[in-house]
Image (tube, rainbow, N blue to C red):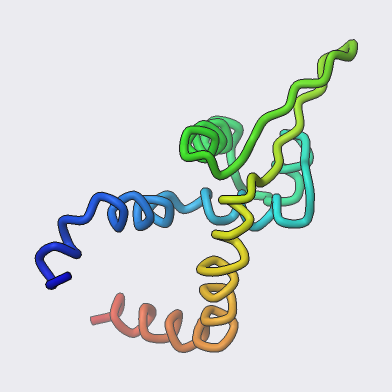
Length: 118
C-alpha cells in the first residue's frame, strides 16, 4: 500500500476519529476496570459534563466498542461495559499512549507552554 492509499483508507480514518474526541479514550480506559453505571463513570472520570458523556457513550456504542445492558429492575439499571473490540483498543493503542504520556508528558506540556508564549 503506498502513502496515498493509506491516507484515503476509511479504516484508518475511523480509528483516528476515536482519538479526535477527547473523552472517548478516557471512557474506554475507565471501563477497562469493569462495567460501570453512568453515574459511576462520571464520578470515576471527573470533569466531564453529562451532555459530553452522553455523546461519548453514543459514539462508542455506535462503534461497537462498548455495550449497554439494561437490567429489568425498579428503578431500571443500565450498565456500560467494553466489548471485545473495545478491550483490544484499550489493551493496545490506549495503553501504549498512556505509557508514552507517562514518559513524555512533562516534555510535551513544557513545549506547549513555550510555544504558547511565542
